[in-house]
Amino acid sequence: QVQLVESGGGLVQAGGSLRLSCAASGRTFSMYAMAWFRQAPGKERDFIASITWNGRSTYYSDSVKGRFTISRDNAKNTVSMQMDSLKPEDTAVYYCAAGRRADMVGLSDMIYWGKGTLVTVSS
Image 1 (cartoon, rainbow, N blue to C red):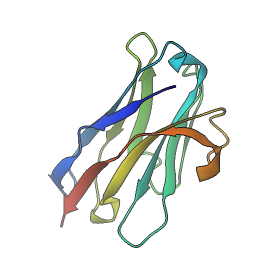
Image 2 (cartoon, rainbow, N blue to C red):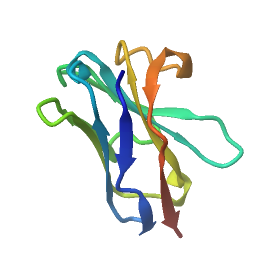
Image 3 (spheres, one colour):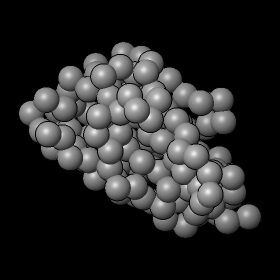
Image 4 (spheres, one colour):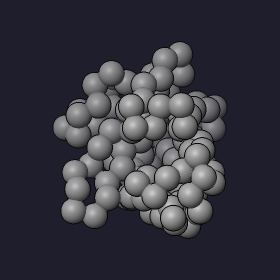
């Protein structure tokens, strides 16, 4: 079993930055691709970014490409996402997830989920 706990959410002004972190348990953390999703009220949960087990490759949705950066540290069992140039439309609950492949990012592809952390971007 892998347990995931997100942190770093909060309130930030448009144009500002925030860094999310996901702490994972388990000896096999490094074998999983990791991903971030987000969900705004009344909307579907959408893929945002993912990273391969060794950190060699990353994938981003068009909505965040160039603004968000995903990274991982397998020695510390963590995955992070640096969010820059935040916009009000980035407001959502952000979820950390673990899956088999970084290029398989459907909701049903994820094996483990965190509980989420709220990011609010004011206009």
